[in-house]
Length: 143
Length: 396
Image (tube, rainbow over all chains, first blue to last red; front, side):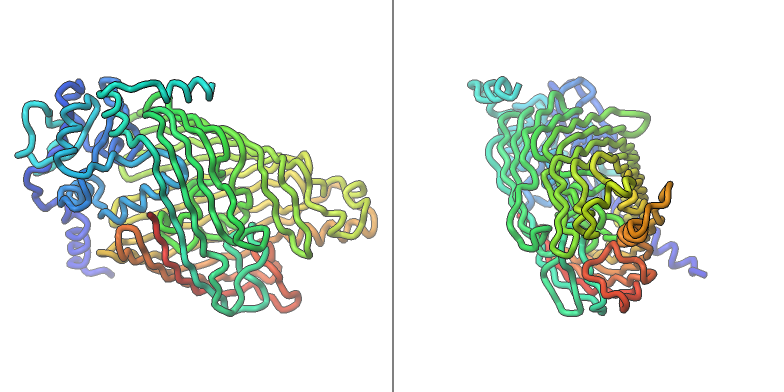
């Protein structure tokens, strides 16, 4: 029989990434995208390349922060509870079988903001403090 | 159509369009994947192969032959709708060497974000994950379970495919149809090849994705243009005339499959089942399945798996004349498989583009389980084998 404490420990391990508060990471779109809200499933579909059509009919254009930005690792931890090596393995399967492309890899946070501001279908994760009137928050990750 | 698309692709783009193209990843890209694998068995009475495209396999000496490979992929994105991809792979295959081959070469057109059409050379997707079975870095185990993927000798076809996704309920329904002509061949042993070129491969599948679940049902059919050189194999020039049920050319073989993936990181489960119904008595019908469970802890992901394959003796509707009947039975029985494998291993992610894997496979089978192997020694082969494997996988 498995001791109850082991089960609790297992549950704590499995649930811990969601239990931790992640201050201020939000998913934003261009204010002209015609989208007000996205569910977590929508965000998974867009960033994992499963379905990239927004409810307004526009094509979603997901943008990744640079690898050296802590937001990227945090975002994927919150989105699908995977680290960046797992995300890379996931995309390796799709790239080398000629399927969907990964999100556009920005070289800097400035590029993320620039694309978000210019591209109606652009969607990216930011610190709440980086959001201004050009963008609309469609999903908040903190509890 | 291709010309019109190409012309649309090179039309001048405004600044906004250019930005959009940039964000869509336009332009030239170069990627690669590879595996440096080392493996050996504990048994020299049969040689272990990754799949039946390999003419010789592992012995009790360490070898880099069966799992090592390198692939290079160049892509050109014309715009957010049109892309060209070329992939070449060097691995140990039917020629008995590592001569590179073009594994993918296609034009992809996405009329909208929910649909895609591809034309050219395409990897075959007989089963879930089958079109990425060479990409070690994308997979958990050293190699896809041979009990399940071993009979897949057709890696690519020249043809077309189309895929479409639609939201359904809380999830996503995805369908794909494909058809093409195989350019490949298979080594049969004793210096004989089966020329599979001209064979028609057609099929489709439906996926449903919801939360951590993905389930797929699929079917692929193959109509072989030419049969294996059975007459030469038997040494009887009129063999297939005397036993028409052994004829393979023109017959359809059907591959049915069911796949289930539960990916609730750090826990992951894969379950696959398949059934191969042969159109000819030259090959036995078979059933296979596998399950893999893994749990990621930090950079290390230990896994445990079980796979099984079993084939059924072919039934001849009439008794072939002597001595043809005995040859027919013997040939058909040379495609018999009846074994199961327990495997245990771990994947260690060293970097975000490099992993190291170690795995042990314990195969338990009957002595007449010979189809999955090469160079069986009869008598001698007892159906049991242990395989030790190490692999370093990378992508760039």
